Amino acid sequence: MVRLRRILGGVAAALTVAAMGAVVQTSPAAAADGPQRVVGGTRATQGEFPFMVRLSMGCGGALYSPTIVLTAAHCVNGTGTNTSITATLGVVDLNSSSRITRRSNYVYRAPGYNGNGKDWALIRLSSPVTGLATLPIATTSAYDTGTFTIAGWGAAREGGAQQRYLLKATVPFVSDATCNSSSMYNGEIIPTDEICAGYTQGGVDTCQGDSGGPMFRRDANNAWIQVGIVSWGDGCARPNKPGVYSQVSYFSSAIQSAASSLGG
Image (cartoon, rainbow, N blue to C red):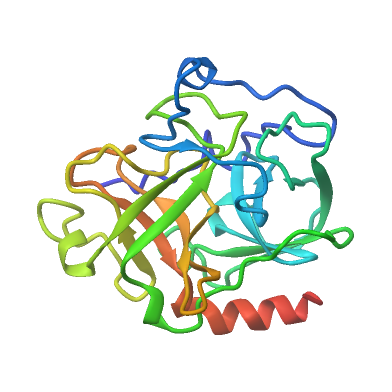
């Protein structure tokens, strides 16, 4: 089975949503007066998830520190100097005049990434972002169960257009054994690297363009903590095909070490 990465058109498909006031295409569903649907989700409110980042190649991310964005490895081309990425932050509406933008100056992709697991990367920004909350990562597996929040500007339906407004939804944890069963992914899940979340009946999920965005939940202090990175799935919101996410707790030491090396 092909592992369908949740990025619209691959790394080369730049949306250029950000810095220069480009208008973001909105699907018919998002243009209607009713609730905005990200495959079963609703529109986020301004300031609800201040750590959310939109990246100009058509991916999402989370503000790990004032100068570093955590995203998916499949969203970037490799490790090294990179000034081509624009990050948009601080808004729900990507066309808002109050949006914050930063260019990248360096990308760090997980060592050994080959398209199968290890799907995380860091993007260093050209200058710090102040006034926005960052999203801490889970360093143990204690929070790798329960109900998670997902959010992004990706498609509101399989094959749909990218969204102008940030959409959110909640999804339940799916065990590795269940996710790897013959009725779901039939052994395709890497138990150490990946975590699944979604509904057996489908209907709620991340989708193309949400890649690299965070899956998060409340910790013991009722603060947001990141447990996953949107990685891949078979279509969007299909029955018995939950979303597959990089398991942040497994990579936490490597992420922290890499971020430290980048000055974050």
